[in-house]
Length: 249
Image (tube, rainbow, N blue to C red; front, top):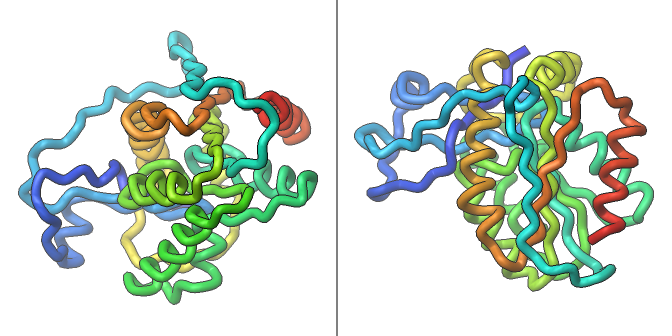
């Protein structure tokens, strides 16, 4: 199984230049999974790249963080955004929450399946539709990886909705996510080269961690919560924990 991996949010120090396929492949591997959001990459020549220490979130010594930067506002209609690596359970839990609450559920991969033909133009079409859903001033459940080329656009679109927003980052050990990702067979149109899952997933995690610190936890209008699991929980147990989080919002 291979997953899509744009590695880091695209905070560029100069305007992006058109990239040839050889530049894309040689500069950054893009990972691909039927349920993973592809992230952004840096154009050739940009040397100001953040450096991320590798840390397995399920390993001993990892420091869990619970970050909430929005005061309790009581029960209000809101948008709920699930983020996380491939295999972390985003789609499963978001779908179940949608079924229980009646809120619409939209993921970037749903938009790819509906609007993309696997080309770069198709990819942009899919993102246009996903961002439009983020901007709509109605409660909804949304899902993408939480990092990558479009992370700032997602944040800005959510702010334009004028809705309260809760961001839930699901974190599981890498080996659990890899095993679950490999079991997925969902075909999703995607235009970029692929990288092995074992290589891509830690990089996606690091990209989310970077965006978590400088995007999701810095916006006063968002309620950001990181929820770690050990990897041995059942789907029902994970869902019960997520429901508890939502009931406290």
